[in-house]
Image (cartoon, rainbow, N blue to C red; front, side, top):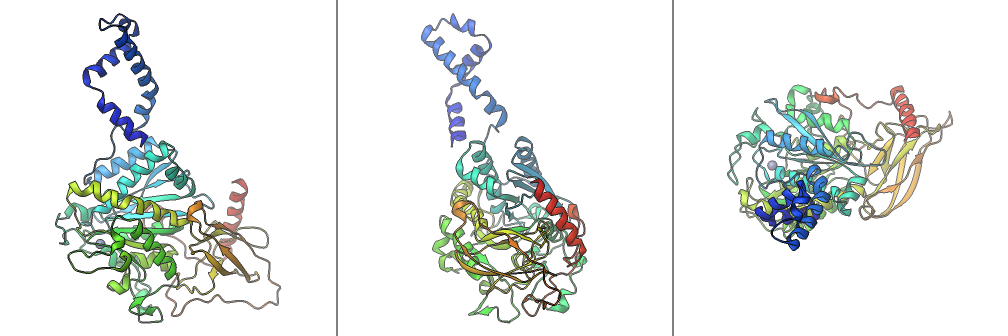
Amino acid sequence: MFYLGLKQQLSLVSPPVFAGVCRCFVGVSRCRSDPRGPQWTGYAAVMSSLLLLLLPLFILTPTTALEFRYHRNGEIEKYLRDISTSNPDIAHVYSIGRSVRGQQLWVLVLSLSPRHHSIGIPEFKYVANMHGNEVLGRVLLLQLIDDLVRGHRNKEAWSVQLLNSTRIHILPTMNPDGFDDAGTHCQFSQGRFNHNGVDLNRNFPDAFAGKRQQGQFVEETQEAEVRAVIGWLRSETFVLSANLHGGALVASYPYDNSNGGSEQVGGASVTPDNDVFVHLAKVYSYNHGSMHRGDSCKDGLSFNDGITNGYQWYALKGGMQDYNYVWAQCLEVTLEVSCCKFPPKDQLPALWTENREALLAFIRQVHLGVKGRVFDSFGVPVQNAVVEVKGRSNICLFRTDKHGEYYRLLLPGNYTFTVTYPGHQVLTETLDVPHGPDRYSALKHDFLLRRAADNSTHYTPTEFSPTPTCNYTLNVEGRCGAVATPTWTGVSAALGLWAALRFLSD
Ligand SMILES: [Zn+2]
């Protein structure tokens, strides 16, 4: 607000007065004998002092707020680089790979530790423009960056607390090639697909496709943009995510697909974390200016509370949100943020106003539930320990990452956790979980394992059946390179030792 106010003050200064102040700034003594009299001289002196005080702000801050328009891909790259260069303490830009036509997929990360993960700080992401002609998300995410950076610079609590507690990754366009080809029609699909004519939201490995098809998840079947996102998911332990689309006004949550098993409930395909997903979707729709009303777009479909189960709306294979949830233990929802896929430019400020609070409130949900680390009997954090919550049989088990960390998004209540790791006793603990988003932190709880006696029976974690290939291999390009399949080997011990050393140095 202060930043906006400052700009308004400047624009109110008329050119002749402003010029006069500048001259005084150069030579104060000349102003003292100004023929306009002592009153004018005093005013000029005050203004020049004010300018001296404000000068650092002009140097450190952009002179204009981000314009409401559709920035080209090259302009987005420049904007993200500028933000990163001028705010190295909280911003960092990186690419997760290239599109089919070779355009970089740029991500801006905002955090107090923008270059590296910090233990206990959850990783969050927003992705937009996966369908090249659904463009409002690009605008919203750029405005969000502008807003967060400006808020942090002005020490506004809402921004400072978010960046202190969260690492926020923002990919404004996942399909820059499609955007270049996009028509501006509200409903048509010109530009929806990538340069190979593939719908990227049908191109991810699918947990419900059956084992035979899962075996076909070789890299040739995945588009460059999808491989880039898969590599990204393996390089960071994302906890919560949203994927911004257009053409409807609704928050849609997993699953998008089903194979007719026990996940099908009343026409929906329901995840074990359905309560959390419904909450997440409602956080967006109720903080949005109108989504929660469930008004229909021109297709006549309306949605209770402005939310829907993806499968119940329409089934789709190979969607990104199912992939995030099943394989990357990242809860993702799909946000349809405008009835018109390519809204006229003059509507952008109002559409930003409708979405701003919802975008911020959704990020805060990354602090739901419980977070912590799992330590072995030597006090070393361990990778690939299974952390299960009773009553939630995930298709692929939630495991600790290379730092020995786990994050479980849960609504307030009592939950029984079971932690398993080879060579150690099964640990069961019940935790009383409060509401974390208000405090910008999930409940912190570490699990300390004890070595199993040699004659103890081994516990097998309850993996949901039929089990997909949770540990299939897929070579990915980009900065991550090929990522090792999770295994219960000595590698994890080495990583654990490394993590322990890192922990001691934190
Ligand atoms: Zn879409």
